[in-house]
Image 1 (cartoon, rainbow, N blue to C red):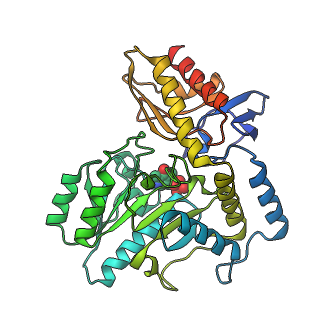
Image 2 (cartoon, protein in one colour; image 1 turned 180 degrees about the horizontal axis):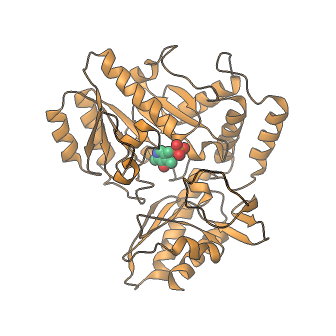
Length: 387
Ligand SMILES: *Cc1c(COP(=O)(O)O)cnc(C)c1O
């Protein structure tokens, strides 16, 4: 078939026609274990009945009005997200990049309101924040920048997990207004910083009147065993962004903020045509219902432990394994050698995983897996590595 879609993705030669829970079926009738959930999007698995029901009902009732009018489902979602995050207000949009754009605009607005010339934001090497001009500039990966120069000004880079580097920036750079970090690097390869990292960043932000912005686009929505990954610590960020798992496949993003940052935007500063429309909010409200009803934060922890233990046991003694790591159901097996062909090999074996950085198997499986399905994921990944 002729294909007029722009060539922005290296696509695999498979076409899924339906899904149920942890499994997908392709156009030839072959089934696959979905160990990736569309990159941490379908955290409740495919065709979850409560989400499907909520969407079918909403589709028959009202898809969209406008942010010119009140949207009770949006207010309800904002209230629920603020209650579980410790944030005060929410701005809704349609993607992770847009949520981060809102956070960047908040930080710049704070700086400009305070008379800081050219306010800048500290960002981290190895991070991923999106593909818009501001968020690709914030991203700490040269490959994402390449060809799109000039990048935006107003970003200062620090190595990941390096508090001394951020302290040095604080000492030398009076234009900084915020630090933006992923509590766990996702696209960068599931790297988990030292326990004290976020707490130390919080202290630096407090001492310098900076905003701490947590990009939880991937790590949020119960994936790591708490609703947000920063909730494994005692600190609160000033701004939290999320998207991927929030709508279980309906596009929705949110920028949450606390304290003074929660009231920075006023009418005319920022907006979105689709952001937080009734359909997207019906999906996200249904996702929150299920996370609570099925205890998925706790399940993500239990399943993550089970999978890591299983992989450690089955892969013990192999000298091609560099590290098995994870937080809840953000999981990685880092190999010593290049495993560029593994995603295709896995696909052939009926398993969806992803390879990042050339040598890291990344798994982002459904939070709704049974124990038996978690064990199946372990044995399939072990098969992939051994055969
Ligand atoms: C995926 C991702 C983004 C970008 O989200 P989009 O919805 O693709 O714009 C931003 N930050 C993190 C941490 C992500 O994983």
